Image (cartoon, rainbow, N blue to C red; front, side, top):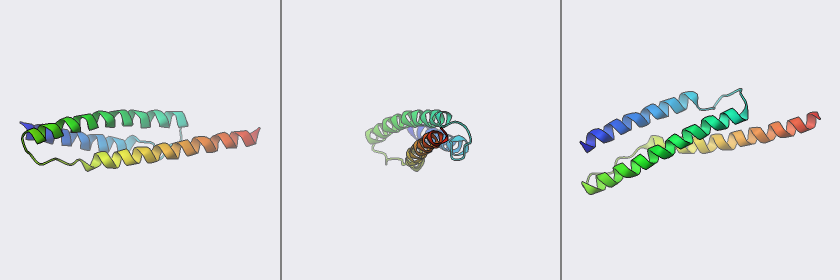
Length: 102
């Protein structure tokens, strides 16, 4: 039963990762605030997935099963942090540019 739960969860992580790669603001022409909203939504979902991973790891320990690794989670966390830095930089550049136009 636990193996099935882990497999289903692994599939949901892969779906999340696919959605992130398709819709995260890697290339984006809209407002910075919209990009930040998208990033925040993904970060919140990722936080929820990490809570579920902790729960699954506790169950694996209880039944003395080897820990399942989900590399997509770490990769996505790093990319979310990088996107946040990038969009902060873009917002700062936009502010400076607007100041020059005045």
